[in-house]
Length: 250
Length: 146
Image (cartoon, rainbow over all chains, first blue to last red; front, top):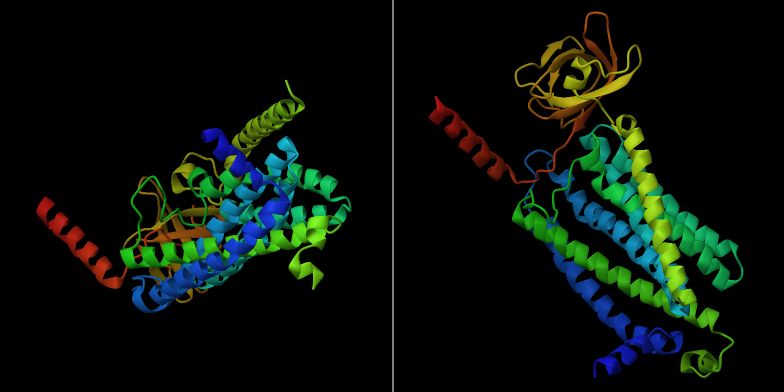
């Protein structure tokens, strides 16, 4: 019985069976992203109270924090897929890593951009070279480097391998980003929400942020699945099963 | 050992080695990675001599004094404090009792002359009513102690 389940699970490691599965999942993730996003934005803009010190400007955290979380988490997932591909030589793994990179780069950029907009009025500077900001910028460069490296190598299998090594080496940066505010004196404040202690923010603010984070999750999964379907079609274009797909034939 | 297992061991081993190497590098760079030094570190002589650096801590309550365009205040980490002089516009969040980071150098008179002052926000987010309640609770606690 359990053996059966294992076989079923691994079935989806092949691009041919994952392609239709991803296609069926995409609308659900889009729907969830819309629901969480609408609820999150409603709370963020209309329900959550003004901050005692920062006024309305603090509302940027409803984008900034979820984007920053996603940029780190997507990197871990991307590196895990890349490592899996390197170790097991599975074709889909490299495609998943490649599909996640642009979304991760977008999230990293969003966190830097919104952070700069918050920093100017609150700190008095768009940018400072403290440990948190610098390591987050390095994360953005790692994504860009991964995308560029993969694009520079024509053979997809070799591109996957080279990208995987870059992605795995870059993993050391993620804990550095996360703990930078603890390990060193930084201008960036410490974490308001963490698994270790009670959150240091008002409950409605927290709810808005968590809903926005969920919306970002669903959005990221939806676009990554869409992108991986495109990559599958591109890389498997020579195979019979792709040529027989309705959307390809028409 | 299958080639797959060898690859997994190789990847795992390399990642562990990389992690340890990074830990050593970060450990060696420790003091250079700090964005600012604290008043206690200055008192211990850990601040760079004759060079610009940043000092960070809390703006001491009741220490803010304006003298034409120049502001004077004390930055404290509750143990030690450093007098700071700054000519220019302070950021909106700059307040007594809140965090701030000043960049500049220490003069012969021991006053830190800042060329830039940044406000450091903490991780607390709450509505004004909640802050009011916190203030009142602290006030009550103070009165009870006396």
